[in-house]
Length: 180
Image (cartoon, rainbow, N blue to C red; front, side, top):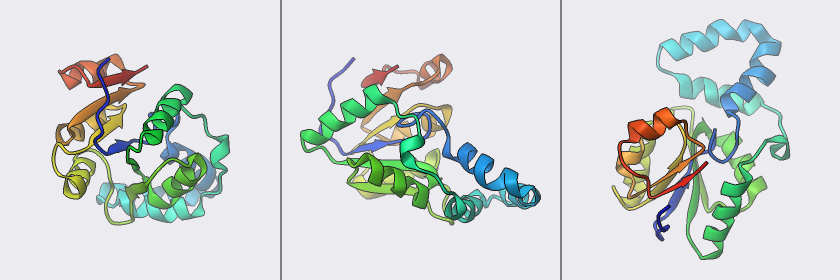
C-alpha cells in the first residue's frame, strides 16, 4: 500500500463509504410502495434523465443515516486524514440531498457533490466535475466500482476501496492505496 498524499480527497458513497447503494434504498422505500412510479422511472432512465428521478425520489426518501452499514476501517482512515487537515469531499452519483444527510451524520466532509436533478454525477461526469473544481490530477478519488474506472483517470491519486477483483484488474495499474 502506498502513502497518501495531501491532495483533496473525493470519496464515493455507494459501496465505498457505505456497503449499500442509496438508489436501491430509495427504490425499496419510495418506489415499491408506489409501484405506479416504475414506468415513469424507466421512461426517465431511457430518455437519459436519471438525475431527475434521483432528485424527485430522493426528496421523498425518509431514512436515518445511522441505519446504514458504514465501511468502518475506511471511515477510521478518513477520520485520520481529516485530522491531518486534508480536505475531504463526499462525491457521489446519489442524489445530493440524500448525500448531504449522510455527510452531516458522518461529520468529516468539507463539501458534498452529488446528482442534482440535471447532472447524474457518475463515471466520466464525476471525473470532469472534480477536475473542473480542482484541476485534472489535482485531487484523490476513493471508489469501488467499474463505474469509477471512468473517474479515476482524472485523479492524481487512486484509492480503491471494497472493489471486486474484476474492477481491480480493469484498473490496469497499481492503486496508490487500497482497502478491502
